[in-house]
Image (cartoon, rainbow, N blue to C red; front, side, top):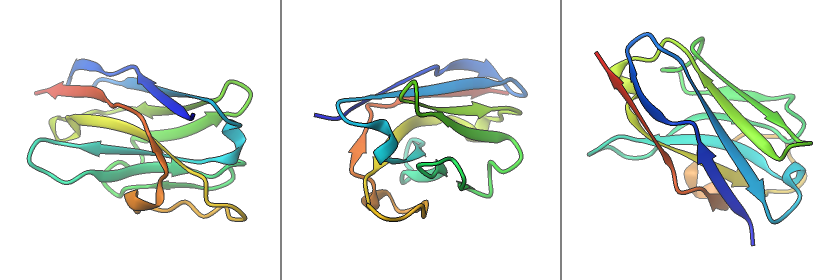
Length: 127
């Protein structure tokens, strides 16, 4: 059974930084392309960032480019989202997800391509 557990959310002021982590257990972490998604109240869940198995490819939502950085540590089974320059529009529940599609390093934005999900961690940014 694959489990994804997010941590690092919180309440911060605009302009602050947060670092989200997601630890994956149950199967080899290196098998997965990893992604971060977020969902705000009344809105659909949206892709935030993703990273390929070998970390050679990253992909970002235009709204976070230059502010957020995704990285992974395959030895620690962890994917991290460093979020800088937070603004109130970043307020959401952030979810970690794993895509087990074989034989590719393509990072998809499509949530239905991700096979496993964490429970989410709340990020609230006040103005």
